[in-house]
Image 1 (cartoon, rainbow, N blue to C red):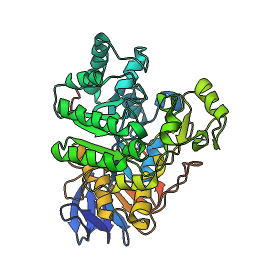
Image 2 (image 1 turned 45 degrees about the vertical axis):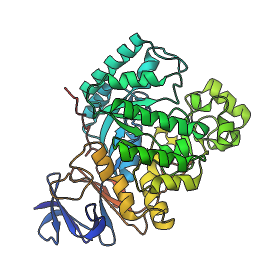
Image 3 (image 1 turned 90 degrees about the vertical axis):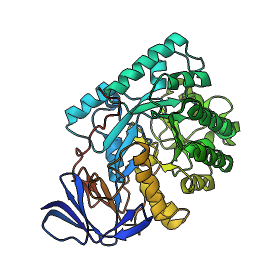
Image 4 (image 1 turned 30 degrees about the vertical axis):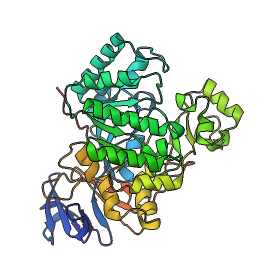
Length: 455
């Protein structure tokens, strides 16, 4: 008997790059049969008019802060409802808690809304040592941080992330020294670039040099917030040429014309508005004292001074350039950069994947359905060496997202990130039904996926 039998749907075949009609059977957490199937099943899903996709894989997100926010699993529940079955946290050089703590809490919870891998954050350990964001680390400080990162890898971290824009005092040779200190040439590193807009091209050249100089896998984070301010055409040419020579390099991007980060960071240092061609009224405050308002010079300066950890949203990017980063045929993945703080944030945390399918595939037609699904599933799966995920094939993990291509659409807004997407009707995670008719029915089917250096 099958655990789940999904009838009458279309599924993506990435070998032929076609959507294929076929039933999909799930047993004991695996895809066990594909084709014209009958037979008894504990649960039968009629997927007529739907696409049965591999579960979406978010290669760049920001995990829960269990220490400060409790154990609600807010962002992971949002991820699950938009079809994400696996995510990579610890991005942009920042971790919310160490890997030991993260794993311990997942054990207490008895599962997680999604499967999750974690990077360790270089900037977090710099901050712990009291290094100014505008200063380079000494050789001794780099040694201490590297030891901490090695311990995190042993505890299950998948790789290491950097956030150069947040600590602009980090010189290139500090990054290279850290990356070279790890012997595995296939080790995974990701980076929030050094500068956006007028600094974007120099930043991309710097990141290309990091992977060429060290030989490591290297992920450029959220390209749209780096280069969708007039530099995207040149940025994509640089990256595409570099990837053609060195496939260890790649990037991810999200489908919104605004970024979000803490107002006290170096992102908002003097000169930012001139670089973007924007002003205070382009900064939106989703929570806190001035919730659902746009900044004035006075409120901007007040929050920078008195509430520097407050997340704000900056409408600084161009829509046509965002579309170009999403549609780029040579490389690139879809990722959310999602984060939630104080029950508010950026709608990318809850709408990224259905937004791509609804707006960029169905409405704007800038990318085909099969190409979009590829960037959401098999490409990030291969990038993260998750060999049993990202494909609809017998023997693969039964992580599946079933959606209606005619109705799928993001719901979350900047004012309310908790508006559910439409058209994401079912999610199967580890062979268990996790979302049914758009509602979460099992929020503990996911697990922590340890990295390759775990001891």
